[in-house]
Image (cartoon, rainbow, N blue to C red; front, side, top):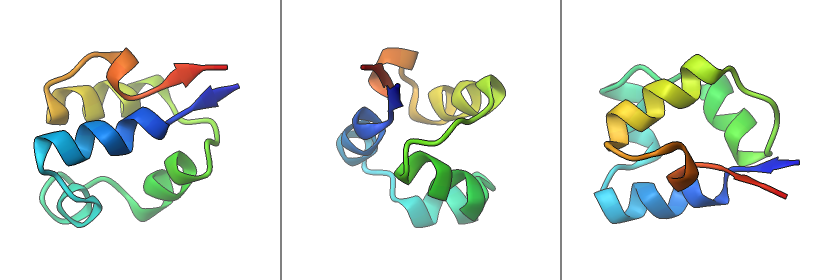
Length: 64
């Protein structure tokens, strides 16, 4: 199982809110909902988040 708990921590450290992801970076509400509920997301979405947050994949997700 993949969990995205680290994403919210990384966002807080970078000072980026979910609202900013939606408004400024055009991350969809449905993607944010999938991340909140640890559902499957495309690799390109993870790549986009890494670029926005200037971080590595392991700063966003974790395999359990």
